[in-house]
Image 1 (cartoon, rainbow, N blue to C red):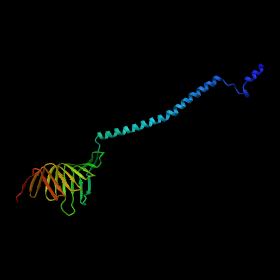
Image 2 (image 1 turned 180 degrees about the vertical axis):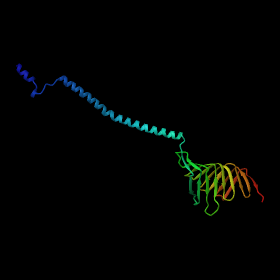
Image 3 (image 1 turned 135 degrees about the vertical axis):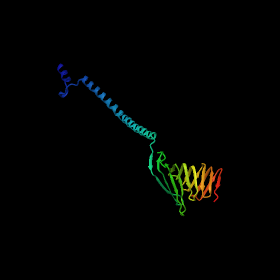
Image 4 (image 1 turned 90 degrees about the horizontal axis):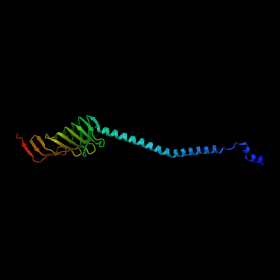
Length: 218
């Protein structure tokens, strides 16, 4: 009977006997590795998203800071001896030149500030053009309107000169309008008023507001 029990407890086929403690330790190690693998399988995608979001946020932040620095430093696009050419609705040409120019607002690239602007409104029938000069100006390339300030001189092409401190020129309509006091001089004498208007490229001129005229007797 003792021999029968020994044979029954012996390993089958000559295989080594399984150590229960060793097997338990192996299973424990396998469970720990499984938990680590399970954790990283779920944590890695989240970590990748967080890293990508952080990089994108850093890029946007640096771009914003750079834009603010450029704005704070007053960075503008400058041009020397600019020249703007165009025609009104009737096909009459005009040209705007200046000593220099700049685009002061990067959000409104159609606006051009001018130093010593000079405007010539040509005619098609051979009449002398209307010529306008000023100390500074702001030209809108979309509306073709020129705002002038400081020592504005207007020659209407008929030997009449208008001097004021402000004028608005609509190059499409060929009009010059000033809402500030004006001194007008011409072959017939001088006139002063609170505003003036020149229409149709010098064909019609009007002085308004407390007008005083001195006629020259030849």
